Amino acid sequence: MTARQRWTILVASTGGALEVFDFVIFGFFARTIGREFFPPQTGMSAETLSFTVLAIGYLSRPVGGIFLGRLGDTHGRRLVFVSSAMIASVSTLLIGILPSYAVWGASAPALLLVLRLIQGLCLGGELPGAVVYAVETVRGRPGVLCGIVFVAVNLALLLATSINLAVQWAFTPEQVNAFGWRIGFLLGGMVGLLSFALRRTLAETDEYARAIGARHREPLAVLFRNHFAPLTTGAAACLLVGASGGIFIGFTPSYLQGLQYDAQQIASAQTRYLIAVAACILVTSYVGDLLPRRYVFRSGAVLSALFTPFFFIAAARHYASLSVLFLMAGVVASLANGTFACAIAEMFPVDVRFSGVATAMNLGLATSLGLTPLAANILVSSLHWTPAPALVIVLCSALAFAASFGMKRERRRADVVDANRNTRWQERR
Image (cartoon, rainbow, N blue to C red; front, top):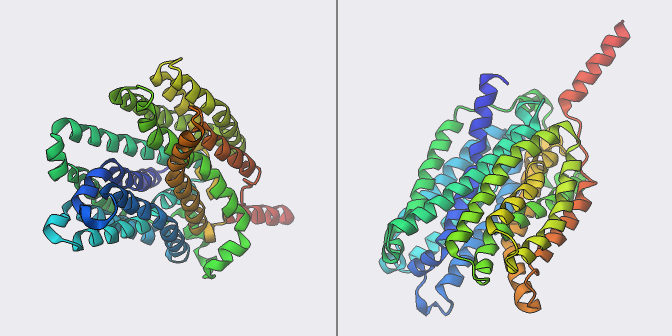
């Protein structure tokens, strides 16, 4: 890679990192935010209302992904990637300084909802934009470059977890409720604005720049009519990735505490999980460039379906160290995490790639991340069977396994041009 291409990948990686960081921080402090912005007389618990706001942010991501993806295909990747970072970062900063209900009354929760909605709409294009930049910057190793993007995602999740632990350690519960929860939003907003400043140095991706003369402005309905199969395949593939994060990061803390595990022990094991995923993604994404990517992804779906029941049985009966179990889970999860995004991006031609990736990824990830913890909780309470949460990942693994057979790479426009040139050269000879 040239120096400019290396810089492009480095800056593009901040897209997925920014998306994950901003959303996870709200989840960590959802209970405190609920007490700050929703009074008891509303008729619903403050915690429920806060998680409702969290869910609205998730559900707005597919809408933002479809809209921003289409803009990225018709007006350029750079414009969308720069603009979404600025608006999302300002929204995050404003949440961090927004006065509580006690100061502004009903205006405070209304503004919180609006800011969260704007944040979700903008972040719907962040991770897909980063993936598109990785795939279209260098033709030789797109899988590895997508892997770097997801390493940044896991590092951002690790950073958010560390900030949460630091705030809980440094301040009393009263101080956390008063101002400590705002620290994560202020830091996230400032990092986002730094990312915005760096993105202004980006140019259009090489492949998009070559194809800009043939770009068309078809209605969004054309994407669903002509590329419905890749959209369905991509969304189904994302279910496994989202379910792994939703179960092993979102659901297991409360579940394992009910099995008499210490909270600090759980946090330490989850940290090892994130490190294992980030490290192994570099390996699995590289393997995905050497072998057909769908084979690596398919093996991850099979291993996830086999390993997850073992994980919950061993954890429930204390058969193995929790850290070892989470390390193994991270290695298994990396097979799908390191290959799914590039495989999805390669299914779409350049003129609809941004909108296709954004739609598929946001539909699949938003659904699985938002619903799998709830589904796992319902299964445990209704079946009274400790390995019940594994059924969620087994189902998502089965859907992802079926989707892997539809992962067919779209020939890039540049590849077609090169083939035509070679044909004409052979004819002249």
